[in-house]
Length: 408
Image (cartoon, rainbow, N blue to C red; front, side, top):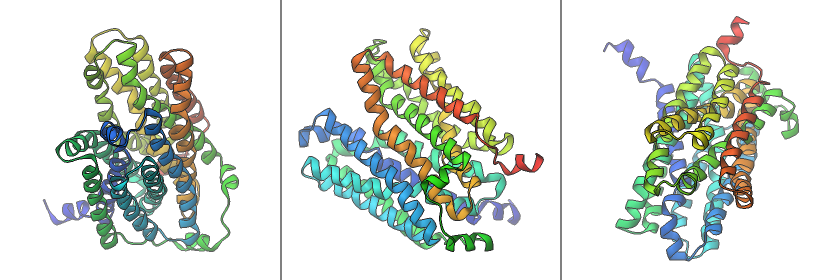
């Protein structure tokens, strides 16, 4: 390999992508820790299922509020790196605090504080990568940073490593040890990440009056992306939570078989998390969003109506789950290309916050209540409605991809 090839690989853009992506994977590893450790925590603290749900909902609500509020604070100050550092340090310490918790209320407090710390991390990362990414890689960088590492660490590795740590030592030790990678990442961010330098017009925008939430929602793409976020995060979480239960109760599968059937969905998120944004770099944001949100219909339809071999069912679920690859596009890429860079974090925080409040806090509870009144089929119907609405909202997007705008 010649020196010019090496210089193209060992660039600040690639190093930044690797560090921020891995750190966001640690965010999801720690956020998802309650699920794999739930049985151990329930036995030790004598919790019920509702209390386990509150732990997740409390974190999601805090995440939603801080994603917008602290993202907007970052925009007003014109700074990114200090907020990034504080976010990583605090959520890592809160993981250790979760291990110290001796009561349910202490554990809730630790998870809520963690949610406040984690919420702004992704919008601020997107705003940094938006400045440092070359235009032709903006979509694929956003997808790699958000989806690949989060799926690898938070969805694939966490369910394997955390129960092993809990059974080998105890669940508290699992929380303590999960804080270590985050603190290491904080040191690397402090040493490696540079504060982005805005161009002249963006620097002037930092000192200009900032629009509020309602003003930003007047931007068509921000409003549309917020609507997509509400429905697609709901689609995602209802599927993650209730698909294994649906296959066990309605389809009569053993729990381990149901787990094997849904497992490939994580592969879809890992791969399509950067493939879909890369496709959007070439064909445009709007066509990619329309195609991949409607594809989300495949998963609940296959779960309800497909009665063939389990490997084929698993493949159909994987195909439908490629819709999760659209998340980086509507959460990060389109908002960052719609508003000035000085407003990037608050606009992305608004989109993320809208989806987290409904998708993270309300939709699992609402879907569960409907299922209690009817049957578990309701979960699949909710997923279909959400994917359909996400696709319909995508029809109203305005194109922002640099390559496509130049040809218009």
